[in-house]
Image (cartoon, rainbow, N blue to C red; front, side, top):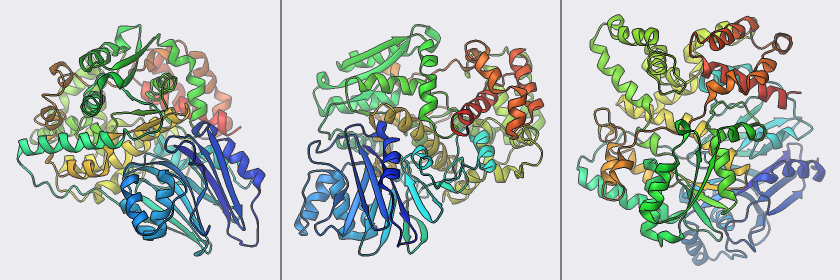
Length: 629
């Protein structure tokens, strides 16, 4: 696992600066503290920082082919690299290392651009082909590993993280207000946009070619939700367990110690159960964090699973204050606005895990593939309510928003009713995002300062959601929403959160649920086997019924609880008010101060639950103060 960066002069007569490349590489040192390497020749500069996982001794990068005409810098893991290596050896390729990076290089040499279809893993890489005078970039299918790029002053610049590109002196920092609008709607910035004009994210499952000054981007993979064929429950259960076990087995390949994040929920517990069948449970290192305050603590669930399987369990019990203490470090790790507050406990568990191992497995992807989120149930409920006149259908939720007390957590009835009402009037193409985001389009129209030039049409602000909804290739609504979730929320929120939090602590995290073959099979399972009535992950729970305790299978989904509402009224109040100071907001010229003041009045007066809106704005202002000064 690594950090990569580089730049190419489009004018082939110019030579890159080693000093500039080194500064870019140093900004990625947290991603690769073990080693570094660079390659500068003609108009091309490639740099890499390495976290040594496979072939620790010899896997130094960049890596060249036999005649030095092709060079690669690489971030990630290819889990089937050993099988590919055997094929390539038989075809006459000569290897100087045992690393998966060199396998990727020779696969490109053998198969060209089609090499990607042979890779099962997570990766982002850059290959310079000196014969073709072409740069080839690619990102894995689900977007586990990041890659940014942009063109400034006749130079194509790329890196694993935005902060490395910002170190290049040719870059011009101009905020993209359309991206700010989408951030406020999504709580992250959906690909391919970034917070800055002229810098983009390479989307998951795509490849990019730079040749003769021209940039070309193509998709190389997609999920097909259009083949819901199998109806045999027992066969589905058996195949799910078999494929998931194989997925976990692939991710146990490592030359350094590894462990697993264990929350006690079904997804992480499923990973542990498969590991326990593949190795001595006493050799499995499980990691969890807990909090002294019961309302935020799930450590007993994790402890129970560890005891059930007999793992070597590591647990750290903290006060919620610990999340505040590392808040500045989390902000430093985020070079784009990002409002998913669960990145804070994710950072904590990553830091704790890194004290013991370099690699950890996690349960990411299970909710998206098996319809585990509450918003999927909301879609099903809204479908049932179609038979009732809209005003009558909305009435119970309106009563709850008026009568139910404001909750200190997102789980309260007041919060759920309010969120349901916020999205119910939107077309089903974009309703999902209206439910789970912060600011609706009409709210943004009042929030932004006059003259922003933003198009507040819902189908513009929710453009990525609408685009993927139309591209889903599925007939059923829940299949379409699952596809949208995978393409947006999974890639740009969940996987971004885990990547930034873990790599800030020099820890690699692997996701067995996102194995290519497993995911391609799961999307062929009819969605009514995933969301049975209002029971989420029904088929997964059935498949694991003999492998996990019933208390785990029946556990209500919680996720990492973060006391955002309390923080904003207490510990973070001073910082919050400073971030929203009138002269500051007016000087920046992005938002309407009177609207922000109204939100603060509602929040501190306990009139309405506007924590999501305030938190998203607060995180934007904190980002602005760090990266635009």
